[in-house]
Amino acid sequence: MAKVDNGVASEVLLFTDGACSGNPGPGGWAYILRHPESGRETSESGAEPDTTNNRMELRAAVQGLAQLKRPTRVELVSDSVYVGTGLSQWLPKWKLQGWKRKDGGRLVPIKNEDLWRELDRLAAAHTVVFTHVAGHAGHVENEQCDKLAVAAYQPLLRRSATRPPLP
Image 1 (cartoon, one colour):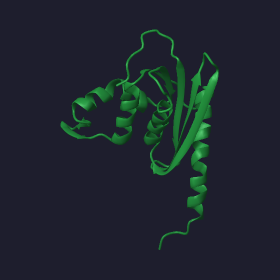
Image 2: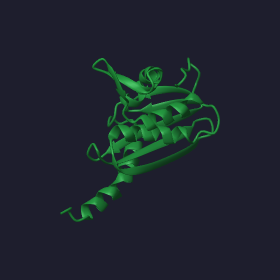
Image 3: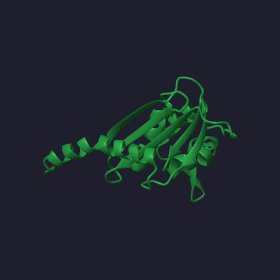
């Protein structure tokens, strides 16, 4: 689980976003990882042919955190309430319940368990603070991540458009 950082400045800023054409459908993810003190910045994006928006939001956070080589204070900035609430509220309960959630009084498997487990493993090595930003509202890095994520899945759309229909 992510640890709360009480008022200490973050060493790195991790901006993330996921996007999907259809839900499910082809999707993309992207992150920008910035070290403000040095001015160093890296970014990466990728795509999957048949996924959901929530999986792409999670994948972006996982890929970004995976770049960190030592315990770090991280501000994770995303428009995904799913990722933020999951890190801060749901993960502890899911783990206590064997990676299950309550649904109608019974425990059922959580969705995207593979990515949640990986995000939990990566976040546990760091002090992560989540900051929510409104999507498509002019936040520069969020908009940049969205463009990278959409661009990442565009070739998948062209490829599926050229396939002949199944008989």
